[in-house]
Length: 230
Length: 224
Image (cartoon, rainbow over the protein chains, first blue to last red):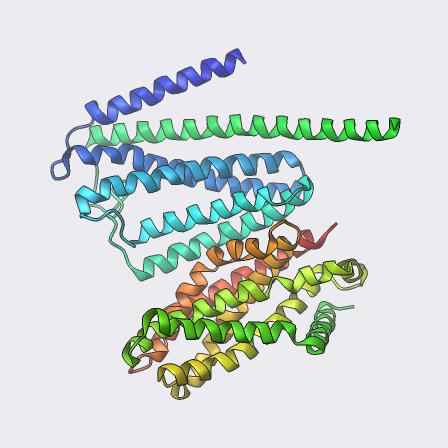
């Protein structure tokens, strides 16, 4: 327990420093100025969200292959965390877009894709609340999770063909694009912090799921014993 | 027993069961006609607007109709526990799911056969000149829809709130299919019809990916 408190404290320190770096260390952007600083959290949350979605898919596949409920616990934990990060992306995006593009929302490629992915993982979470038996819940949600993940490249492709208005990738983008070295350092630091936060949250959520499972098993055993006695 | 034969037997059983009551077909057909009528009250489109929005209307109607009509596919087997009989038969899980998919393809196909002329008539959008290509696109789109829908109907059948759950699971997964199908259909309904090959390949890719995924995951879906 003490270890968790220490890790959480360290995490809070990292997040605080990431905020400080984004607000004070990173240089001012020449056209967008202060509002551009939200990018350090917006884009790095996007990375963390994508990584978490990837973990959901891997956990789903491993569950179907190994039939160990542990992978199911990882699946639900990563799915919840991924929805949280996608929500951050969807909330910080419009805050940035309104002053810069003049509208809160536009049906541009990446915005649309984030919204679609958010909807898909919310559906995944709802499906899980509606199946009682833990084993069946694990199986059907793993199947749904695999279908969801397989659809994402097609979503990406269709939306890409359809339109694109989002700023072209700046990090790992074409030759002309690129970040100021200090900006890049701050951005990669923030992305790292978000990834660590994501892993920490999944870990905690996994622990909760394991305890829930234990409590469920114990209460079932207690019921059986009571029936045996009666 | 080989899978193709088993799937054909399941298909035959589905059609026989449906023909005894025609419950599913009549409900679905009437549902789609109601949606097409409501469209007029919501937008009152001129013939030009109908050309532009018609493709979207057709596919929204089919997606909604599919997410409602595919629900009984597996739920029906639970009422008298016939799902156990199906599982005990030598038919593989995929043969069962695929047989049901083909049956649903036929049912939704019949619905389209009625929907299309009615839409064309009510909104003055000629479909006869592009009928062949339109039928091809309807087939590609409907196949993907019923393939994923039948698998998800088995998923939803194992959950509570299944009537509401199926659309919730199915519609967001079908977004790329709907995207591609609407774009191609809109191209066909335009003043100078053209078949957009890029979107046709997206549609075909959707079908291939989800057919393969269903084939690989079916065994897990129906186990006890």
